[in-house]
Length: 130
Image (tube, rainbow, N blue to C red):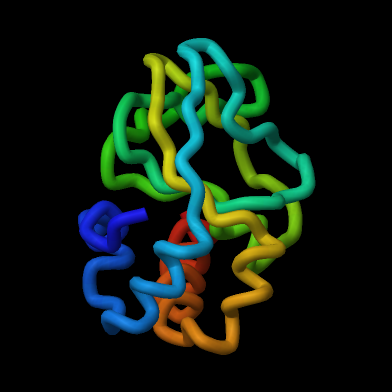
């Protein structure tokens, strides 16, 4: 995957070039159909997703949309880095293209991407406080 696609995300934009390269080699593109669940509340978190195209709704326990996510947004970092469990259900509003970093791939490259981990952990902690 080209590093410019990854650097387009604000949470990743300031990563050193070697970390962008490690991340590019580990990430995969995922297509999601409108109406599909991207993640489900309380499920075990197995990946972090970066929205490249499309929109999704973050839902409350009762199914109400509380936030619309779109290009440039990230989801899944809280489960992967902090809690182990998904903190929300996210449903695709439109067809989506996501960049995905699987937990096992993150663990494999973790020692070589310290800035990535710091950046995602900051984002997760900030969101968990909301």
